[in-house]
Amino acid sequence: MAEYVKVAETTGFAPGMVKHAEVRGRAIAVANVDGQYYAIDAACTHVGGPLAEGELSGYVLTCPWHRGQFDVRTGEVLRPPPRAPVRTYPVKVEGDAVLVEVPES
Image (cartoon, rainbow, N blue to C red):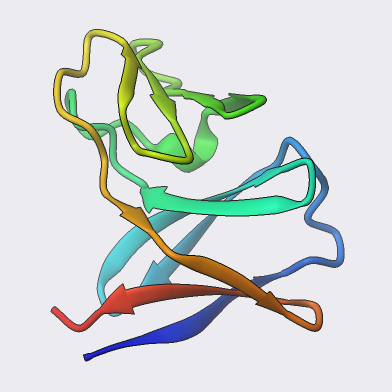
């Protein structure tokens, strides 16, 4: 069963930022795009680069290791070398809490 888990607070989480969170043993990258929050797996599907350390430009998150790009809304690959998309997770905001829905492993 999936439930929403708090991963961040909106305070200090400015647009253009990406934060790393651990939820139920999963590494998640949470991105703020103009006040909308998106969550994807934090490991690049190419060789596991740390996406939460990548550069966010609009909806495009660039892996810091080999510059592969993903759309944070869909997880789709926008620029290789990754070939497979990353998993996305539903996000909601309640008050100042950013919550991500992650299924149990």
